[in-house]
Length: 192
Image 1 (cartoon, one colour):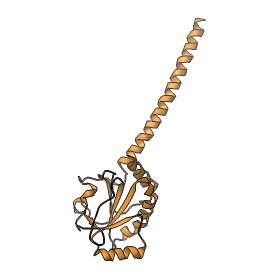
Image 2 (cartoon, helix red, strand yellow; image 1 turned 90 degrees about the vertical axis):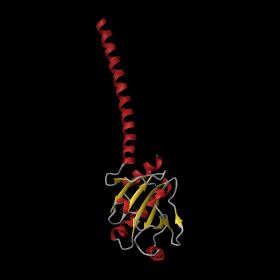
Image 3 (cartoon, helix red, strand yellow; image 1 turned 45 degrees about the vertical axis):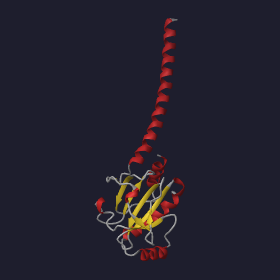
Image 4 (cartoon, helix red, strand yellow; image 1 turned 30 degrees about the vertical axis):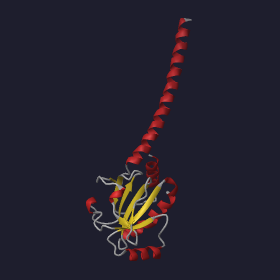
């Protein structure tokens, strides 16, 4: 009977170990998924970390009348610098507008800044002719050299600011902005 008791104890201990293993595995999976979401917030592989110690308030922008414009506060904001003569900029604009529409309810905003592109009334006429508009906020760079400190040698340039206005990521050149990867990244950043 002693061996039967030992066998019973081994079965009980093994059962408890299995239950503990299942519980630990579930906790690891849950924490692993949380870590994956955090990793997505930290970086998109095809974007670079934003190096300068700038905030969204660092950029001087204006509307068509020359009045100062600020970036939205309390929202994740993509700031896309573009120009009428920049073909890659024009090709990515429909994706940016679609992204802005899809992310409206996620506290994500898009501001498209025309730079190095002539007088604001010409740019505004161009926008009206292309029927680009809401939900994107279009504005103009008051300082034509605004991108020089970034080392940008061309357009488009896109910067992602978090809800506190801190620059998080930057992209030199066009991208597929309306992808699920971008939407997941921005939604996770908006939840931080």
